[in-house]
Length: 312
Image (cartoon, rainbow, N blue to C red; front, side, top):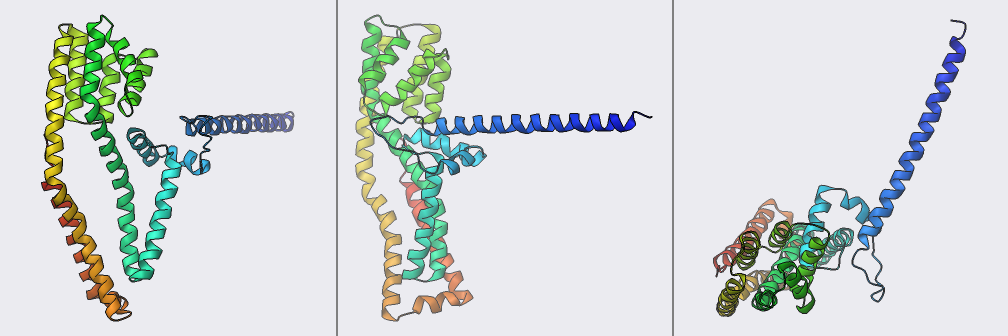
């Protein structure tokens, strides 16, 4: 018991030393993590482009969240030269801009509705870019299958044919198959790399191509004749899709024009008597009417797009 004070001091000093080591280890790990996020945010930059990534601090914090990871996956699929942090800041700036501009032109209540529309618009933009990239990729599928068929007919392995297609084709097919070739180069299986491609750009045509390549790689067989037949089929589907898109273009323009006409009527109403929209939205009944009308316009836009979505 006489050594109890010395024992207490020793334990306290040991605890202090361990605490200092722990803080130092945490700081070093945090610095390494920040450096890793910084390098990840700069992936895809070239010295010739010279573009520096903006909002790196926001990007590092956002990537750690589930929402940030989802945004990152979607941006990667769209092929946009953006980081999740840049996208989030741009969307937030757009929402604030919509709130102040629409609120000043119409009424503050309409600014709030426009801000909510901006939240939906940010996700709609990514989905539109993904659809646009998928359509462009589908348009290149006949040429892609032709390149793969010629390469395999010349006696090249399927992995070599994929690398050759990545070099010869333009984007987005060249970029996507370059990514597949890079995954194969680091030892990933052909099935996993192609299935990830199909998940990244979902389409029936790409699913058929991936299934053909995977089955041919597993069981062997006449892959050249299969690719030749698939090329002819994809050419026919490409022409059919173009005709359907042309026939439905007027209907899709109507889906956008009708809500714009509604906003035009609001401008006319506000121009006839200054402050009419402010008086309308000050009353509870007016707010309910605006919400219901906006919901009906949105429902009409949604239904028209759903009814004109023809799968070929």
